[in-house]
Every structure is written in structure tokens, then in C-alpha cells.
Length: 133
Image: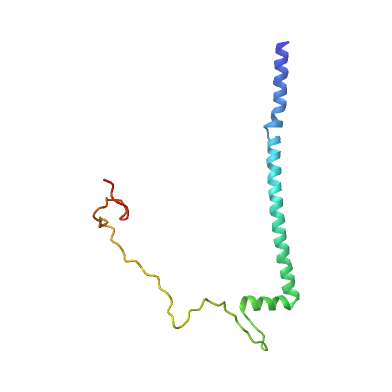
């Protein structure tokens, strides 16, 4: 009886092997479904982009408004009977009487000379702190 139980268990394991680990297993199906969902999302984004480009091409082929808008925005073109005004952003102005303030540039300190030690201070201590004795 024990041999029959072991034999049946081996048969069940052999029958279940392809279902869980084989070529068409549940794990592979789950991975392929997740890849399919990602690809569908990417396809939807690309389809929206293609639709926008298609609408732009149709608009450029049929109407002159889109061509005029592109010429104005990208090439800076104006019509013959128009006057072009360009408004620049204002910068903070300084009065002519006072020159602009210049920040003082500290003199470079040589790196090979040791710092000066003041009398009454220990090396490494700040000049305002008294030396520890």
C-alpha cells in the first residue's frame, strides 16, 4: 500500500510540473500578461501622439490659419500691413547717479603658509577664545 501511495504522489507531481514550472506555466502566463498590459499602455500613448500629428497635418493641408500661425511663431513673420512690436522684459534699473554696487573680492591667501598665531591663543583656537592653560 505504501508503494502505491508513493507512486500516485509521483504521478501527481509529474502531472503538475508543466502547470507550475513548464513552458505554459502560470508564472509565464502572469509575466506575459504584465508585459501585454505595459505594451498596451505604450501603444495608447503612441496612438494619441499619432492622432495629434495627423490632426496637425490635416490642418496644415486644408487651412491657411495653421500655416500662418507657424510662420508667425517659428519664423517671426508678419504681414505687409502689420507693425511688429517686441516687448522686452524689464530688468531692475539702477539710477545713473549711483554706480552698481560691486562686491569686494577678498585677497587670495597662500595655502602653503601657516596661519598666524596671536599671543595668548593656542594653535587651532579662535582669536576671540582665551587659550586653555
